Image (cartoon, rainbow, N blue to C red):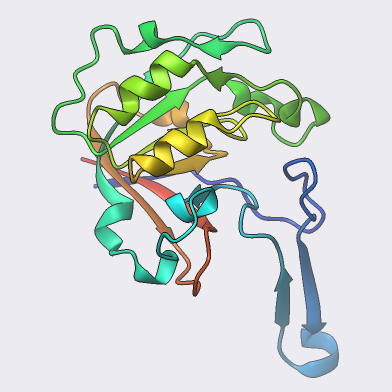
Length: 209
């Protein structure tokens, strides 16, 4: 089995979604002074590669600690969405010829990861067209993942609202989707077990034969 890391590295002061606080990795103890390293993390739940669960936009839903691990694991497939111009909407046509039967997750590879670490990454990323969102909600998937900051444009929330109503999760800021095969594989996106919380950074991993 080969493991492919689909996560971005969390780093001190890294760029985050507009309006969010940048993470801090504070070394409160060091080897030279204290004999051991101790780090305090200050970061938002939506920092870096992360999952949003329905509670993000739907009041009364359970927090992360109440969801079974099976919600974050299962067969997945990656599909390439050609978005040469941005801002752009990924159309329903991206699903043509794609068999979602037996899948739990669909990952959309837009190539937007090439802007990671630059101001461009959080400026006009590709979002999902409403027709595509509705088709994905009707598919029975557990979740949808992208190599962008999110399924909605900056000030939109249609995809988040509809995914939440369909009990789906969003996986955002994925990396290295070009390392994945066209065939199905196992996906693991385990969040931290945070009480009453709507999102969490994850170590997203593809398990390939």
